[in-house]
Image (tube, rainbow, N blue to C red; front, side):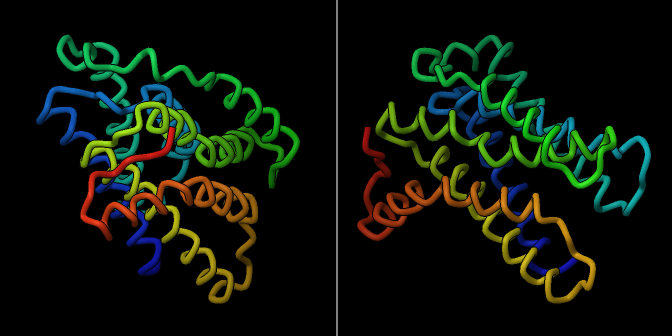
Length: 215
């Protein structure tokens, strides 16, 4: 554990809390991609298979359970909550996310660190997380205007990954056997996907204006 990973975990947790606040306080999921949330649920369910086999620390186990619980709760609200589901932007959220799932699984079978059940699904979850934000970014571009809570949610997701890049750099120099190259490369790709959003987010903050993305 180091300060960069802790900061990454906290910003990741804040992103979930912001999204849950939006859903439960406003009873709406407008502007949120259900497909991205389903991808994240799949990411955590496949990454944390070691919950049943390995114990690292109370903090580690607690964070895994929180991430799984938050994503499953968000998906449930968007699919089955009788009020929230009515505001889902089904016409805008048309990204074919199952292609991402298939491509990432094939990639995990080809590029992995060990050919074991858990390592294959760990690699799959890393690849899938790198691109899981795509349906959300596409939905925001199609809608144009981004409400404050949705913008904060995406911002904290991007900040979480940026902190994790700093975490990997730190571990590379501090740990003699740090070799998680799959996570590092995927994390760089994931962060790059946020570049356009961060640019317009900065402009809106600088000009004290509503966040708008080009269609």
